[in-house]
Image (cartoon, rainbow over all chains, first blue to last red; front, side):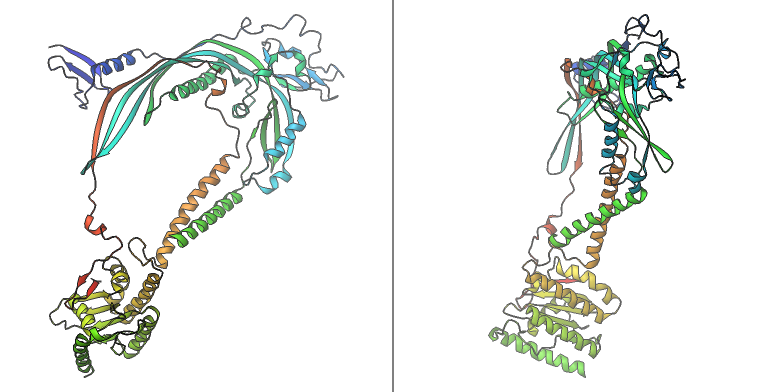
Length: 362
Length: 276
């Protein structure tokens, strides 16, 4: 007697195919199978691989490369080119304004040893746009403490070119789902439920373009992702003069460290999109997903962000505005009194309306 | 002495009523036999003042609803069941209002307590709904020996049930009578549900105060038209069938609908009835 072993899709137990009885039944859970379906299921198990992320390294050759000859020369380091005053900045500051004369200063020496950005999106919205966006943001906020609007003072309002890594890639994916379809019927004594299990396989691919990952330690990732998306149709090649009048940071999280964040977001999107092609089932569970990423290219770009810090009752509240699209995000304080006032107010309204309906019509 | 006189009186009336009833027609708002005693307290459970008070309320119900109410306390049921005694007492006594002898009788005896409805009483004090519903609410008084409170409370509920009957939509299983406590309980449940709903809404408002959040995906950066599927295979693997027994519905109790089950007394008159 000859025996072959397969894994049961229901309980993962080993199925013994008894060649004499021609019967294919799991000895553990008593489920029986079509032979073709079982073979396909076990084949798809064997073919599963680990995810692969084929990013090119970001090097001199892949990016714009080094600064051109003379581009960094002839500028006094840490000295204001207008008044000669000494400029104190943090080691990552590339562009700032002079504390003495207020003129913009670009600290070219800071750029040495770093890559030149490939792209830049210039600021489209000014200081006043950021201020009015804050006022608009505070409107229709019933839980905001009443005094916040009056007592809240803008501590600082800064336009910053934030370093971002932009990830381009093609993705091939192979995803296995377990899906079920249920039928319910009944006779005079019993209600029956038939649950049919399906092996659903989807292979395919898609391309991603310029998935941004914040390259600055100082900038909060939550804020930087919340102000997405930027309009890349207005992206241009990096030119130093764009920095004038704004603060610019250079990256302190390199491309290598930023890859996992890009991978995670890309993988979730791929799974979501594939999942949306599995239709007509009652439940769908992703059992295995294998993603292979290739032709991955990384770009280095400076993107415009307005940062607002406001002070209320000795606490700093920060807001960010997309300097191109005006998308405004932040965190506002919640008044405990207002929270409960609204909760009990709504409770009374709902109770009154529902009780009235009950007493009059029921 | 008083008791014997009453019994004699009732016996005489019973005889008279049996013979005369077919020939008597009375204006609908008046009881067919206004002079009959509406409270026959042979077990002496009520004081005279209590009886006077209850009688005045019964007269109000006569006037308001053209509906008779009779209270009987009697321990000697002459070998009859509480049901038959109550039905016969009502029928042969000549109680009731109008051609259909509408009315209700409450019998209190050592052998049990019984409510019997006649005429419109069959619908208002139905065997299926009215009698058990009211019986449940007044039984505690009788259990505790508070007979006056029990009868008085019965008159309160009768008033409400009869008032509801006049609207053309009497209390039934499908249109249940609710006491103030029932209504307050429901309003309480509504208030709790409203509180939970409000808390969810306001918590949502609180969450929206923070708009700086990480994104979980990168769907915005998928190149348009780049998505292709190279394999789409859906293979049936196996199926399982489970069965659960359908709970048997008790067809005899639910078939009543808006009607009321009734029985015929020895006089041939239909009654609703039930103990409490």
